[in-house]
Structures are given as structure tokens and as C-alpha cells.
Length: 469
Image (tube, rainbow, N blue to C red; front, side, top):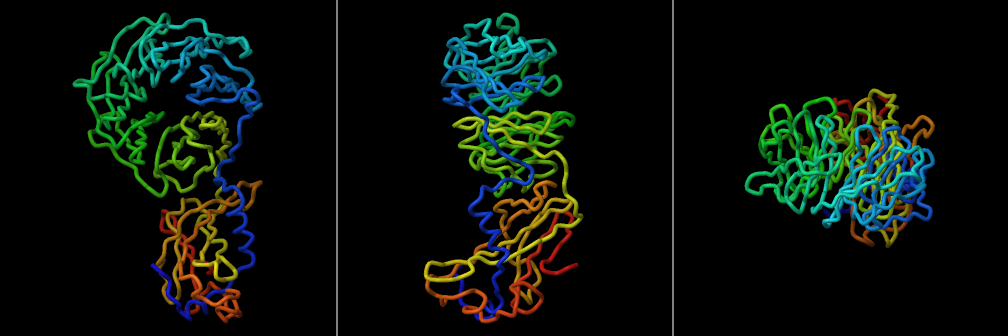
């Protein structure tokens, strides 16, 4: 809708000099999320051709990341945050990997019929790690899991459209699991919950379920478009499914295998979920298209970590609050603050203003911007209204985060809305005097034509800026 000239509207506006510095922080600086700090792993001479799946050793010292084109494993020192060595895979084109429960063996599933590599990583120094066996296996192994209860290996074979069950000692074939009537044409991920195996079938929009005791197919559960990642809840009877094309999460009740799982969707927060991890009792979701992390507790959270690299695809979490993200050009490590630093019970709108300060021929819009600090509960909505209206008539969108107290890790959520108008429609001059003619008045307040910004949390607690209560 094109903005029409209203003299009362312009009489209500006065610029805020303090807010201009805030705008510079938002537009010129890199926006980081409230709980995250993103840095790059130093690669040195070990440049990645194509970063792939990753796993961290149980002692927390090393991160192992596949390089799918170089056909090796890059070893990252977690204390130094740099690649220290690599392990050649002897012709295996790596596609997936898993660790043995004792942490002494790494199993790497290959693509294009290149087989499976077994890597001995028991030595203290990764320069001594080496491939000790290569199993000649036809197939394209999208995912691989170590089933410790038997023990054995479970592999999703894209080429055979089956789940292959192999001996972890010599790679011999123990069983093959198939979905009846070829209803899982593209198995892409695996998850185990109790005695059940769950398989993400990307092109069939289903999750297939097998009994690991009898090795029989139990049922197929319909989910949303293109399920590509699975993650079992560590305690509750739930399985999360990332549907990348639909931009949604499905939640399956693993105790009764409900046919219609719960679906979580919020296009403003989540567009292309690619991978998931548990960290600090919370679910963290990697959104590939927006290169960000989204957190889920009992709902999708607006607070996100952004700027994770070009098309991030793989994701690993360490218990100390450290995350690793593999993107098309390398690795990033993300430091997550696991301490809840919220100190207020209510949400608070700390400041608000309009931009630009001056209007000339180049302008065709103004932005109303507000900085909100969350209280104990997440912010549900931020909006603004013009007096005498007191109801939030216009919603504002979350566009970034700025630091309020870096040492205490307190941050402000930045919201904005845009008001368009025709170019050259307004006279040149400052917003406060030349155009609006009401320099003694503030933009925000309780008088007619002034503005009020309101923030509401999940428990219907409000703050109306600039009111003091």
C-alpha cells in the first residue's frame, strides 16, 4: 500500500539521534544472534574441496570431517580450532560416517560403489590414525549407524533402496531391510529409539519403521515434503523429522507410532531445515537456505544464530556448548552461551525511532525500528500503533540482534517495519523540523498522532514504549 500524505502523521514524527548509531550497528555490522558467536576453523594448507559429514571423538579433543571430493578425513583440533592433519581413505568416496562405542574405530560409508573404510583412531596422536580395512561393497551409503546392542552396522543404501545390516568386524552381510512395494526409494537418514529403527525416505515423504529385534518392517509414517534428517529425543518418546522442502518439522510419538505426527511450521523462522542436534536440553536446527540456527524448546524460537557460511549442510554439537557447521567452503565453530542471562520478568522496548533522518529525492520509504530485550519468556510479537489507537495495528519483523552488555551476554532484538511513499512526494528537509514542523514534540508518546511500540511475550505480558509502567 502506497503511503498517502497526512499532515497529522508528519506532525507526530521527530528523529532520534541516539538511534542513528544503532542503525549503523545493524546495517554495517554483522548481525549475530543473542546466544551465539560464529568463527571459522583455520584450514591452513588443508583446504576443503567439499566438506561433508562430521563426528567428534568422545574425549572432546578432535573433530573428524569428511572431504567428499578430496576423499580424506580432515582432523580438527578442538582446543586450537584448526585442521592439524588428514587421513587418506584409499579410494573410498566418503558419504557418511559413524564411531564405534569405544571410540577406537571410525566407519566411513562410500558413494558410487567405492565401499566402506574402517579407520583405526585409537592412537593418541591423529597423525598415527590410518585405514586398516576397506570392505568392497556395492552401494551408495547415505547414512551409517553403529547399533551397540548387537553390535552391528546399519547403513542406508540409496542404490539398493534398502537398509543393509553388516558385521562391524568384517563387513559381512547379516540382513537386508526393505520397505514393502518399494515405498522407500531414497533412504537418506537413520535414527534408533529403543528397539526401533527409523528411516527417512526423502522422495516418498515418509518415515519407515523397523523392529531391530525381529528385523521386520512395522509401518510407514507420513510426514511433510522431503524428510532428510532424523533425531531422537534423548529422554522423551519423540522423534524429530526435518522436512527440507516443506520447511517444517514433524514430531513422531515413538511409543505408539502415530500416523499423523505433529507438524511445526513457521515460515518466518524456518525455511529449509537440513540437520538437527541436541544441546543443553534443547533442539537446534540448521536452516540451510537462510544459513542460520533455530532453537526449539516447546516452540520455534525467534532468537537465531546467523551467518554460518554458504549452504551449510552438516552439524555436530559438543556438550560444552560448542557447535560445528560444515558449509560449502569450510568449517565454522559456533560458541553457544548455555546460561540463561535473562534478568527481566517482562519484555522491554528499550528504544525506538525512524530512519532516515533527512528525506530527499532518493527516498521512497521510512523505517520504524525498535530494540526489545526479552524477559523470562520469549517475545511473541512486536508492533506499533499511532495515537489515539492503542492496539498494535502493524506488526514488526525481527531483523537482527545487537549487544546491550557484551560481558553479561545481554542482547537486544531488533524489529522493524517499512512505510513506503511516492518518490519526490515530500519536501526536502529534516524529519523533525522542515518536514513535520513540530520540533518540540517527540515521535513517541501519549498525545494524538504520536506513536507507541508494544512488545508482548508468550504469557501476554506487555510493555508499551515509551510508557514507564
